[in-house]
Length: 544
Image (cartoon, rainbow, N blue to C red; front, side, top):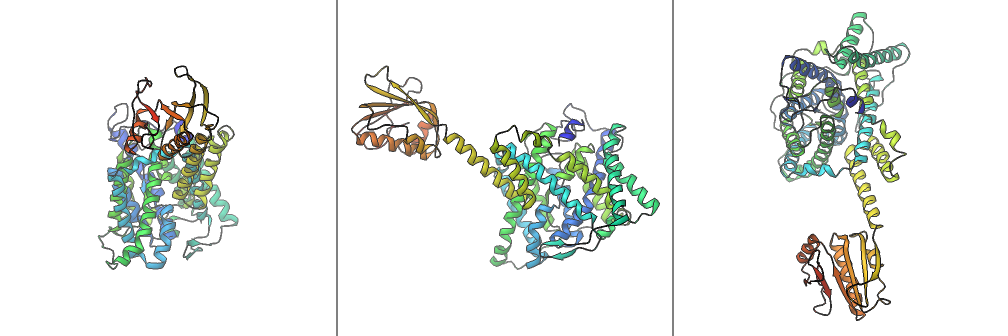
C-alpha cells in the first residue's frame, strides 16, 4: 500500500467518481485509462473466481457469475469508486461446508439471505462502527491479507487437475518440478519486472496489463508448456439466468441457512469496509460505509437469484485497479463487462493466458499491499499495539478475516480499559472553604475497570467528619462508576460522616438523573453549579 502511495498513481477523487479532486472531468485520456484498468482487473478476476468456486465446491461459472454481478452492482452504487468486488476466498471457505452437506441450491438461498442482512445493516447505519477498528488492527489486516493472497497463488504452481475435492475444498495436488517449474518461475519474474519497470518508462498502458500481454504473447508464440487459465476449467458460458433457489420454503430451511448467512454477511461487510477504509486512505476521501453495506447487500441478493456464489470487496483486485490508474466507477463497470465478454465470446482466447502472468501480477499486489513499515514500527510502538498487529496477521492467515478483526478489536479494547483503569488516583488536601474538611481530588476516568481502584482511595475510618470528593479532573462514565460512588458514600454515612461530591460534569449529571438519583444543587460548586450532599435524606446518592 505504501508503494502505491509513493508511486504517485493514487490521486484524490470526487465521490461521484467521474471527476478528480482537482475538478478535472472525464476526457478521452481518462476514459482510456479507466477501460484498460478494467480490462486488467477482469483478466486477474478469471483465475481467482474459478479457484474460489473450486474451494466452495461449485461449478466455475458460479464463481464467474458472482464476480460479474457483484462487481457490476457495487461498481455502480458502492460507497467508494475504485473498489473492486467479486467472489472471494474468505467467503468460499465458509460456503464449502454448506455446499457439501446440503447442495448448491441452499448456497443460493443463503446468499440471498446474506444480502438482505447486509442491506439491513446498511439501512441501520451500522457501517459507521468500522471506525472502532484501531490502526494496529488495520495493519494486521493488511499484512494478513497480503500473506493470504500470496499463499493463494502457490496453488498455481501445482500440476493442473492434480488437486482433489474434499469437504474442505480443493486439497492436495502435485507440485510442478524440473523445467516446468523453472519456466513458470521465469515467467512470473518477467511479469513482475515488467509491472515494476514499465511505469518508470511510460504510463500509456497499465503495467499489469502490459505484463500479462507480453508474457502471454511469449508463451503462445514459443509454444511453451506451462499451466494456462484453461487448465483450471473452461470459462465458456451464457448469460446468467434468473433462478429462484429450489429449496423447501420451511422453517427448517431457514434454520439451516441463517447461521451461514449471518457469518457470510459479517465477513463480507468487514472485508468490504476495511478495504473501503484503505481505498479512502489512499484517495483522501472518507464516508460511504453505509452505502457500501447496502450496495454489497443488493449485489448479493441479486447474485443469489442469478446462480452466483456471492462476494465482497477484493483488496487484491482493488489494488490492481488503483495501480493501473482506475479512479472512477467506469473502471469497475468495465471490469465486470469485460468479464462477461470473456464468458460469452472470448473464452478460448482467455483460456490461453499463462497462469504465470497472473501470478506475477498478484505477487506485485502482495508487495504493494503488505505494510512493510509495520516491521520497523513494531519496536517503536507500545508492546500491546505490536501484539495486536502480529495477532491479527496470524489469525487472518490461519482462520479468517472476521475472526481476526473481532479478536483484534477485543484485545485493543481490553488494553485500553486496563490502561485507563490504572490511571485512577486521588490527591488529598484540606479544604480552604470548609474548616476541618478533607478533599479528595480524583484524577482519571471512573468506569467499570477503575471502580474497585476508586473505592480503595478512601480512608473512611481515618477521615474527618466532613469529606469532599472533587471530580473536576475525572469523568464518571457508566453505571459501575455510579455504583462505586454510592458505595463509598454509603460507607461514610454508616460511619456517621458527611460526604460532598463536586464538579461532576453535565453529562454525568444527566446520567445520574436518568438513573433516578436525587440531586441537590449548591452554590459551592461554581464551575458546574452542581454539588451533591450525601446525607440521611433518603439513603440514595445525592446527585451528579
